[in-house]
Image 1 (cartoon, rainbow, N blue to C red):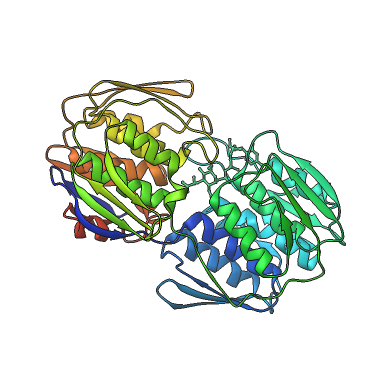
Image 2 (image 1 turned 45 degrees about the vertical axis):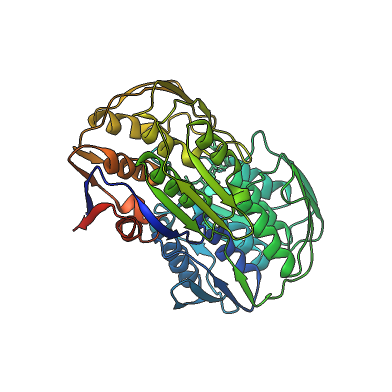
Length: 420
Ligand code: EPZ
C-alpha cells in the first residue's frame, strides 16, 4: 500500500491547475450508455474512480478509450451485457449510475447493491423507489438489484432529503421513456446541472435543473453531441485553497469555477483568509493570510457548505485561535479523520454528528491512516503544517479522487513524497 511522507513547515507558493471534477465525470460516463454513438469527454481527471467506471463500461461491452491525458472516447453502441458485478460495485458506489441508463435503453439491468463506506451506511433506496415509480419491476436477489422494464414512464418522485446521486441517476433514466418524470426536492449541485446540460445537448428534454424541481419529458432516443467538457473540481479547488491559507502560502488556482465555491470562500473569509476570486479568468488568487480564526460549520446540500470540504476545514481549524463547532448535516459519522488528527496533537471532541475543535499552538508529525477520500486529504493538509514528519498510510483512498496530488503539492513547495 502506498504512503505519503510529509515534512511539515513549508508555505505553499505558485500556481496549480484544478482538474476536472470526478463527481461530474462519473455520471457523464454512465450517461453515455443512453447514447448508441461515440462521445468524447474532455478535461476528465486521471483518478482511480474514473478508471473503475471505464472498466465497468468495458465489461458491459462498450468501447472505451483514453485517447490522451484528460480525453476519453466512449462508444456504447455495442453494449451486450447488462450486469454490473459486485467486484466492481464494491470498489465504487457510483457504479449504481449504470442501472437506470441500462434499464432505459435495454429494458433490463442487474447491478450489485453497493456496500457502505467509511462514514456510515450509504443507502440507495431513493434510487430504487424512483425507478419503481417510473414503472420498473425491481427485486433484490443474492445481493443484486435485478431490474426489468418494458418502458419507463410517467412518475412524480419526491425525495425525503436531497440526494446528488439519486437526482442524477433518475434524471438520466427518465430521458428515454414514454412519459413525464417530475423530481421534487432535487439536488442543486453543479455536477447535476452539468449532467442535465450534457443530456439536453444529446436531445433530452429537461427543465428545472439547478432548482428543487426537475422535469424530464421522455424521448425515444438520444444522439451524441460529439464532445463535452467536464467542469472543474470544486472540492479539489477548495482543498488547495485551504492548503494555501493554512500554510500561510500564496497560491493561484487556475481553471476554477468560482461560482461553485461561494459557501467555501465565504467560510474561508470568515476564518481570516484573503483572496481574489476572478470568475472571468476562472482564477482564485490566495494571498498570505494572518492568523486562522475559529469558525462554525454546518454541512448542507448545495449551495450550502459541502460535506466534502468538512475534513479539510477541520484540519485547518485544529490550529485556529479558538474553538470551532462543526456539524455534519449530511453524514453524521463522517469524523474518522478527527481521531487521526488527534494523533498529530489536535484537540477535538466528537459526538453525535458534531465535532468541537479547540485550536492548539501547533501540530506535531506522526504516522496516521486515511479512511476515506476527503479524510485522506485532511491528513495530508495537517502534515503540511505539523512539525516534523507525518506518514499518511492507505492513500489509495486519495488516489480515487485527487489527480497527481503529491506532484501538484510538490510543485507548490510542499515536502511530500510517495513511497510504495
Ligand atoms: C455524492 O454522493 C458524492 N459522490 C459524495 O462525494 C458527496 O459526499 C455526496 O454526494 C453529498 O454531497 C459522488 O458524486 C460520486 P447523496 P451520493 O445521495 O450521491 C442519503 C466524495 O468525497 N441517501 O447526495 O452517494 C445519504 O445517506 C464523495 O467525492 C439516502 O438515504 O450522496 C446521505 O445521508 C463522498 N437514500 C444523503 O442522502 C438514497 O437512496 C445525501 O447522499 C440516497 C442517498
